[in-house]
Length: 600
Image (spheres, rainbow, N blue to C red):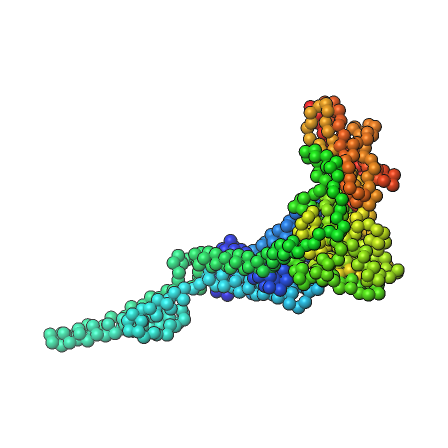
């Protein structure tokens, strides 16, 4: 039983919890928009979960949900919170304090998660605490509203009647006192009427000379019922309480709560700065300089233009995204700086304007995620524009003992890049543009690292703000303590883009095509075999350099029936990819990409 002494239906109690939870999240979102979008409790808790995720579970999530793993995680957290909120509503049905205590606990959990994020301060606890307070108030208010005694209506009606009668407002007693007072007044009125009637009888009897009959005893006045809302009666609530459930008042209050939650959540979204970042990107586009060292035109034969084959240049909108950022960082280029320090003789701090003043160069580079399964989609090729990272490091005076560059993202993510790879002459860049456009927010605006030949988890820091020259025996990047290798050179691999696994094809001549990659070594040959037979050499497309993937194609003659098609690549060092199958962890998947088709 709650403090009012009545029990709401279970659905109503769950609804009060859900609405209270929605208000809590909405208020937390708008407060986080004022402080840091990453401090919102759902995002903070989600980030903590990502950090604690074992490598195997991470691989399953990427394999199952692909680039949608983040929306799935956030959606799952919201669903769990909704179930918990409904449960708190049911607890509050028994005792309101239980629901309040539950919301307080979840506020503390959100605050603790926010404090655990990189660069968090005490202000980061405010969204969770403010949300919990708003949720607790909403839960209490909805419960009171749904189980109102009607006293407020009685007071309003009484005052209106008093004003209409003479403008004098009388004090209104409490329901129980009002009942006793009304009963007393009723008994007094009845007695007075009986007395007056008796006197009249005595007078008439005296005039006629007859004795007046004895006055009958006044009948006891029935107890006046307490004020109850329409629909009250036996079973409507507690027999000893005038409070009853009011569906209409609950639903109108819930609707108001949902509206508040929606407005607050939308306000938080507006405040998180995504529109400001887009405006900043447009401003950068107007001032982006031309490359001092432009890349050579892409050869006409680099793209075989076969329908269904991945294009040589991956459009920005289709470029894969795998990172730990549940909310894409919004970075103002006017305030962005890159700090280069650690084992250097002359620490450097560059502004965005400083970076654009440097000689910029273009480079065609294919990026690959270490989470890519054999034949997987997490690979893309682009033309990047940026400043050479090696030149910046030389100006800072990087020391001989440094063998790792520990780069830090705006959201606190880190990766360790081998110094020797960056300094060996390859086109390692601090990139500001991608395929002729300013970097998209999701791909690192305003600045990201691009290092050919290394998997992204040890090279491709997006939203980079800091590079510390250090050593592998002293520091480690984000994924290393989670079971991944400290160094991640990309392995020679190949993929069949068409036909697709499980396709039905026309018997006879069929074209197989795909891509192969061995960044900074180059692909020298691609071979295809059918049903485990002899390997046949595929036709290779042209390529502008060693750091990109390479398209291939081969016409096959397939007899009716089911067939398997496999592919393998050989890089410029003479290494042919292995048939041994291995998962992505800890340093990249291996094996032949093999598909099955049916010819009819």
